[in-house]
Length: 158
Image 1 (cartoon, rainbow, N blue to C red):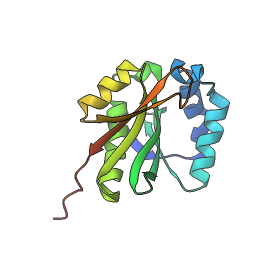
Image 2: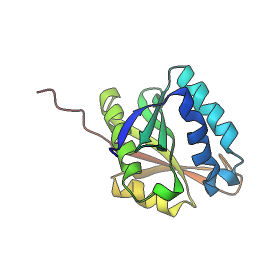
Image 3: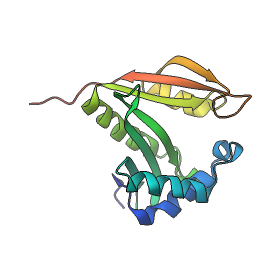
Image 4: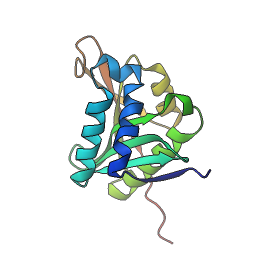
């Protein structure tokens, strides 16, 4: 089956919520499957950018705020890949889509990652993201969120 990144549809909400529900880092902050599904469905309904990676089933998603980084730059609000499908390049496909959007905005891509999430930090750093700040206690009192940034090139207009 071909892997495609496509816009979120309302009937994707339960599958995306289940991915969040199966992810321990979000379980620790109280974000469960039902709440995540409702948040994503509401975001898509408001016209926000929510993408899914579909390889026959919804295996991941990315929620992107096109101007959420300081009111002018793309901000990756949330990204997740189903545990059974991690390390299959699906997160990279979602990040490629995010960075394409960032390039069409102002060429800057921002995201935050929990300081205890070493795997995600490695993934983002391999993609060229650098830490530009920390927000202690933002999501959980004993954890800091790292603010990461990357300059992305606008697509060529040839």
